[in-house]
Length: 426
Image (tube, rainbow, N blue to C red):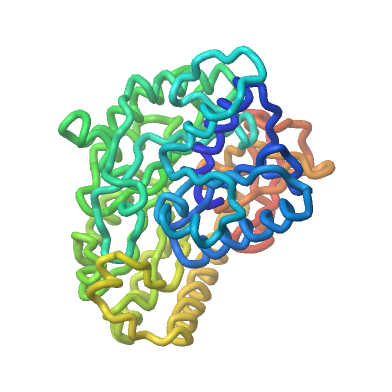
């Protein structure tokens, strides 16, 4: 369940279980195993409810004799490690975000097991693409966010360890690396006493076989601007940045404890676009946060209209217990007002995205083939992260997943779906 950072933990668990002699399937549509392991999400209310609902469904399957033991790990069980076992006695074992390796150790060995390196994993993504987590935790303590309560303080992985994992993944056929963390901007500050994201990415880009590197989840305050020079200079570093801004109105940003104001946010966006020509920016925004007056919301709308973000997601504020906002700010905006604002914001973004999509028709573009759908190849560009961004459908190529092609965009089927024709192999 949950984000790509959770997915990596699941992939590491898969690897260890297989090394111990177990047959393992991932995301089985019909769970029927001796053990069923659920890696839960505990970030926001909807994600928590989804995790709980799945556990209840599995408990019923266990009662019917369809599955054996139910094992729970991840963010939800880390956050509610005392409450959940009392609420759900049907669950056999509970682990948190970081102690799930104890589950593997508790199992009887079924074959010879070699010692796994910390980062070794069984990929569940297409073999040409992988997520790569470079740090864990967060020191930002935004007032609305429970992540630091779950994951703890920001902890960077050593550069050499990340490079070792990158080389190993290249040897397995991975060409595209989606770099993730709770906070990319702080990478290296704990280990090396300075921002080190640019150093890491520059070294990764040197590795033969690394075709695309894409950056996710940067933080705008104290942004490591030296990464922009690397992005502009290195051809295999995608001209793409995922940076969650949350809002633009100063009173709301202050209540959110974002440590940046609207003026400096706009300056940063201007600098990013200046230093990396052609970059496409993905952001996430929030509506309905305590203190968001109608005037503040209109300022947010005007900001989105002027910035014309290439990729944007949004959600309405949901109070999370034990956060600063839950303890100190009144959640006074009615749910129907939050939903109206969210709908209005996303309608505006859809209009912007459609205008941008139509402007891309006729453009030559490099694509990676993700999958086959009959005679059609489903592809992505350097500006499109797996599962969340645009896809391109190409039907005049014999390319296979993992191949790169040069194509021309022939139509925009929607703001997020294109048709294209291959010109030649890349």
